[in-house]
Image (tube, rainbow, N blue to C red; front, side, top):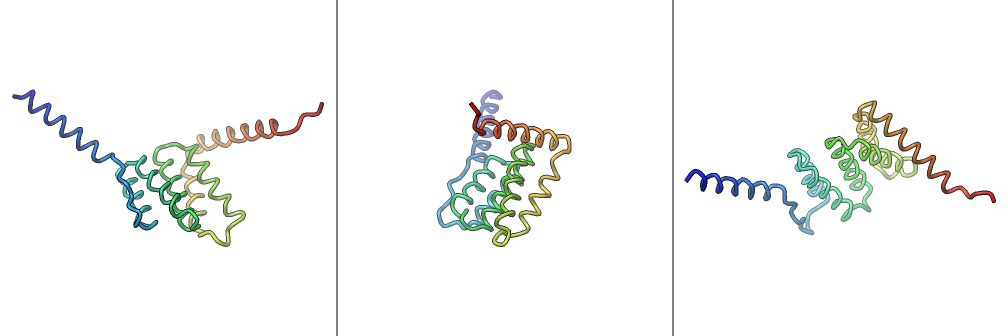
Length: 150
């Protein structure tokens, strides 16, 4: 009897786990704010894969709106910080900040500031390593794209 009860409890726990981690289809009538809120709720529950799905979907559906694009992009970087994927976070935040070099007039300033704060949350040693790696890759890429003299 104990064995049957244990098996039933295991099956119940497994089905509960599956139902909690399943990414639900987002109805077409949901607004960008609602989709981003779904992502934020997922982050609160440490469901980072689900959160990334929501933020990417917000960009896919509403990314032509600068406010939504910058907010969802920032949130993706924030998820990477939570996951300790610092290089990914750095790239997202750096790219977001770079957008302001050319489009500051149409982009909400708060996301630039939040991206700067995001970069400051990367541990100093990791940040130095990431920057060194990216500079090395950039230099290597530059050398490969220069025409050779023959």
